[in-house]
Amino acid sequence: DVQLQASGGGSVQAGGSLRLSCAASGFTFDDYAIGWFRQAPGKEREGVSCIATRDDSTWYEGSVKGRFTISSDNAKNTVFLQMNNLKPEDTAVYYCAAASGPYRCRTGYGMNLWGKGTLVTVSS
Image (tube, rainbow, N blue to C red; front, top):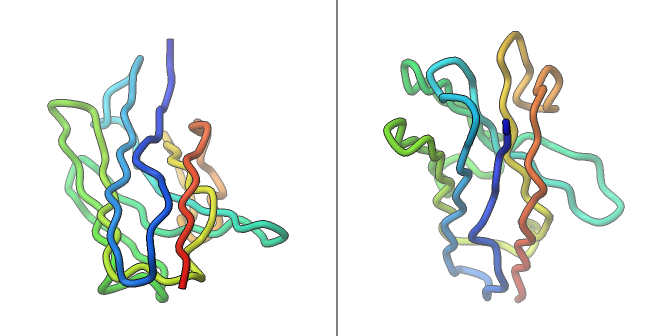
């Protein structure tokens, strides 16, 4: 079955690090762009980072640029989000999603497959 599974969330102190994983089943990353999105309580969903796995082109939201790194292991159909120097404002449920056509990473528009999400909590 076509599915995305996000994992790796947890609770950390400010300045700490987490590594999120997004494992795909039922399709191959060669045909999709994969993105990480987050939604904090009471806030709109926003794009964090996306990667086009065919050529490894990437996009980062401005507030995470330089702190987060997205990467892919196409052989394992897995995309990672390495999050360093975490801040309390990074607290959110993080989702991975896939797009098989045109999309906007900043909002998630065009992403046609979504995972369940994993909670990241950053305390001061």
